[in-house]
Amino acid sequence: MVCLDCHKVLSVPEDEGDGLCPRCGAKVFLRRPDSIAETWAFLITSLILVFPANILPIMRVDFMGSQEYSTIMDGIIYFFKEGSYGIGIIILTASILVPLFKVIGIALILLSIKFRWRSWLRHKDLMFRFIEFIGRWSMLDIFVIALLMATVDFGFLTSIAAGPAAGFFCGVVISTMLAAISFDTRLIWDAY
Amino acid sequence: MSEFELHEGFIVCPECDLILRESSVEHGFKIVCPRCGTTLRSVVLHSPEKVIALALAGLLFFIPAIFFPLLTLQIAGLEHSGSVWDSAVKLIRSGFLFPGIMVLLTAVVVPLANFIILLTVAIQIQFKRANRITARMFRLYHHMEEWGMLEVYMIGILVTIIKLFHMARIIYDTGFFCFIGLIVSSVGLILVLDEHRFWEEIEQQGRQYVIASEPGKELDEVTFKRERDTLLG
Image (cartoon, helix red, strand yellow):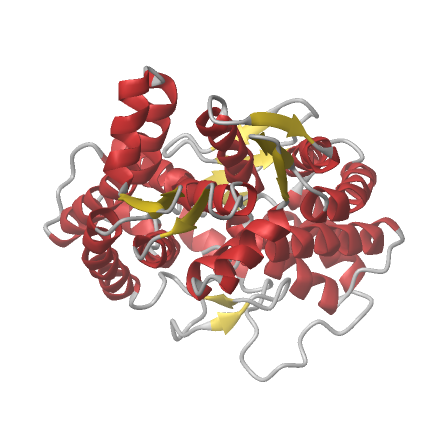
């Protein structure tokens, strides 16, 4: 078996218990304990958080005293209306498609482990690694809001503030990232 | 054959648990798992030296990139600047504690920690002083790696510029160019880091010290011989 942190190859101990990796000191197991349960927990959490993240407004623009709240969808529609299709697609992908894809993707993988579906193994693994890779890009919106807040600060004339959705958005990022981390990818291949 | 040779003859894929026989890799090539496609070994020549160079570069860029203003906006005669640090602090000051802390962590604290850890580890390896603390630090880096989101912030800057393009006059400040330098260092660092080489060095150099004095059972490399015989027998 192999250590998950330093990838050192180790032998399976007689009693199948856990041990410490002699090279880096990490706990080593045949399979990560409770991986499926943890991943489901994080996944359900992220699913719950996705709704307020997209329904509540993420940004508030103050212009000459009037306040205008906008959600993620509003921002995307704005870009499309203005003709900036490229940016609109980037934000659409990072904010909505990415979390959605992650949640559905991980759920599919977990279900296929539960019911032992054997087809498309290689694709599922690729899908998982894609999910792992793109998870962090959902932070894009938060960074944009933060930077807008910091730069567009002209008092009464115009200023930007974040909205309540911001916290939920961060929550979605964290819980989907933790779901990907807690998942032991070797489980996909165990059905082999 | 000694046990060490047998032991060193195998690679186990961490993603799909496939057992492979190890072969030598030349620099410029990499080993990929035939079943799941993960990159198993990617050799970089002189990795410790390169890591030291890029980590230092990153650290040099870090303070100006984060604390100096990135962009300055001019609207109707008024002017205002913002830096990465400003963006995080503004969120916190406005009462958005959680998002603010997230921005602080992912764009400032974690990247800084990563630079410092890699610099320290690479220096220790280069001067043959790796020990258990080195192993701990490198493990820490392993876990923190994905929480550093500087590249995402860079695209965030791009999106912001596009959003503000028609609204105001944008001036690109010192912080902006230092941030680009920071990104280049950060990405370059990932490319020149040869994790396998680093772990091997840590292991070899660490043999001078006692590796495990922690409570808990240590897995024995020696018994690997038995398992291999079972595998092949």
